[in-house]
Amino acid sequence: MAELRGALIGCGFFAVNQMHAWRDIADVSIVAVCDRDPERLTVVGDQFGIARRYTDAAALFAGESLDFVDIATTAPSHRSLVEMAARHGVPAICQKPFAPSLADAKAMVKACTDAGVPLMVHENFRWQSPIQAVRAVLDSGDIGTPFFGRISFRSAYDVFSGQPYLATGKRFIIEDLGIHSLDIARFLLGDVSTITTRTARINPEIAGEDVATMLMDHKSGATSVVDCSYATKLATEPFPQTLVEIDGSDGTIRLEQNYRLTVTGRNGTAVSDVSPPLLPWASRPWHNIQESVVAIQKHWVDCLANGTEPATSGADNLRTLALVEAAYAGAASREPVQLDALLR
Image (tube, rainbow, N blue to C red):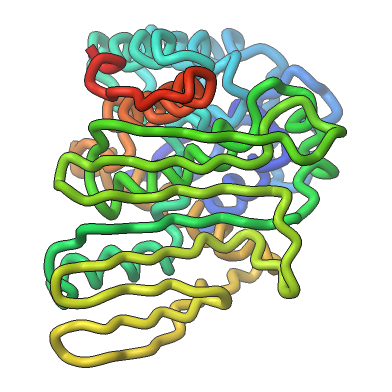
């Protein structure tokens, strides 16, 4: 395969992980970087040896011949950048949250569909090797048909020091973290018909909610609970591990702290260590997220090479984003919210 030429737009906190991952993937080269902040542009450009640097995305598209663009900016800028990529016929991988509203997300998907260019959302939690291990057990049929799941992320880790803007938005944990947990629930148990949500703000120093509990009816017939907290102080800090419980007709799956996977099924009980690999550029405890960045970006490259739709395509992510919108609507109304109405 000929080497793919990509560009990164947005040189902030998380984009460094994406740059490391691109460097680890064969037949890909990031040839240019773009950020409105010259200081961040210099830092990332120097760190990764990227000489071609832009402070304006329009100038980037005009000045480069690209096979794809990696959009790693914050959500309010995503629509204009994705639509710009579509106008130039450039496939785009876009950071989550995909868009500030479902209407914007639908417009972005339509723009890329009309232009005939692929669009993928950088929804990487489902690509973490422990989550993939849970999916593999489900696919094996060892626990039968799943009827209940719990996706849990409870922590007191200080996420605000690295990303201070998280403390200022009226929306916080569902939009920033819950979106990943909701996507994992979809990945493991299928699409959702109804969601009921309760939220709380425990930390008085932030503007948004830092606790959320969501009960979901899946179209498969399963029920799941997704619970997220940044106000939970534990004896051993689990950040950034997602814990998973799945009950099936013939057994159970438990993904516990420290990546311990216990499967009780048709063949008895098996316990295994599904710890993610520690990549040379990664650091604990972030390494599970960092290795998943490589996995999702490899998937994107494979999809471009084979002409297949990404698992977390823009169209697929509309269903995850609809869950986020429905969760906030349900938290406000304290009533269950039907998903299909939001997706029409």
